[in-house]
Length: 606
Image (tube, rainbow, N blue to C red; front, side, top):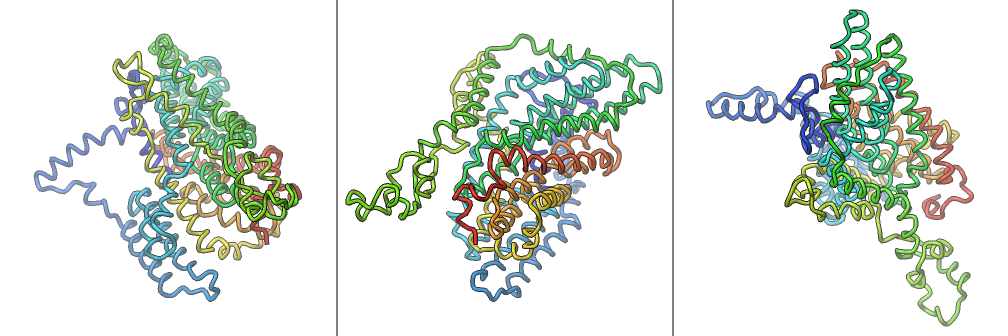
């Protein structure tokens, strides 16, 4: 199972173990848990008894499987071979063998699941200093970047939404709004799932919506007597649940915090070129695409699962769940305000503050003298003059590098901080978001996984491994940009059906940046292609967290139970992503206008 699938399953905890049909009672502030997670305490208790009696539990017997043994052996052999026998004559690339040895070892451990994926992600902290690639202090910075802060802030906000059940109230009312006809019901479930996954964990949103979907199907079956119609309703129920899982994956492309590959691209762009992809710019570039893909998904699900159904589905379960929530509370209102402030901060406030709150560096001395004159006022301090520039526009005019003091994570964290201070009216004596609950919902394993990917990318940069590998994929630059982007999205889409999308993005983006630099093209042209492709895997249970959660329900038999609609969705995603890169993203970022490209992107052109 890909690393991100495992981590999402861990951080979301999945379904409620109280009911195999997902209809377990849900109290305020309690969450649905995966059957496997819910059973863990019972398993732990039974294994403790077995160990006490001297017996060996089955889980202990099979913990070090053949696949893991092969991973340890093969990974160690590759690592040793690369260090001892792989040599490159060019002095520029003399550390590439060490970097590739680390990379291949990590890939082997990830694929074979030798250890927890997050543990594998921490290998650079050990190996890079030992092999002289980077110091421990430098590489550690990758594990707590602005991207990490952004994810911490976003998931604490999501935790607050869950704690007061605001996310559930929003979802239920949207489902009720769209009615009980098959197409309306698909919209009613898939639209809130898509919307919530723009800011919450994809797997967590899936776990929230699936019990509601199953409840609608069960209550409809209870009043349907026709055998043929019952069969149609059951088939539609499978499609409804698949649509929920797919829509959360689609929502993962819509914002910077929706899924790790988006944030990885943002951080790598900032680290490589000093260019900040803002929250608002990302939404503007891909918001229309992700909604269009949602509409395609509704059509695909209806075509495969809903064409034969004629019965209106029951809304009794939805009405009952809304009634249980009662009137909206003061806590829900405060959390809603904080959520709106967070969105306003990252989308609009950042655009207002960042150009005037930062520092300018690495200016062009020639442009400084040309713009301000070689006066005695500048004198010998002309090189340092850019440090006195107070806004991004003046800095850009002298080819300087403007760095805003406020990162995207800072803006989001600014809006979540009051949640730890404002007292709750429901939980007397506690804040709206208790610290212990907040940290239990932060996906530390995902943050480590992202950090490991960024560490690998940093290693690629300092060892010039990106340049070395880019030489082998140089023919890609000879293709017309449209076909190159289409090819990259397609390959990455099907590749991430069986590999971690976060790790894949972290490895491929620096390489694609180098290919773009060598061909004097906008690096985000290929960067967006990688990140979009990494989010377009719908075919297999192991491709994404939502797919894994869906597969755990047992509604789809066999490993390829939803491969056919998944293939159609992969194809739709590849086509729409390619169109988005050359339309809305091109309009915002100027991806094909190399004459007026931001000077930051030209500094590595050969």
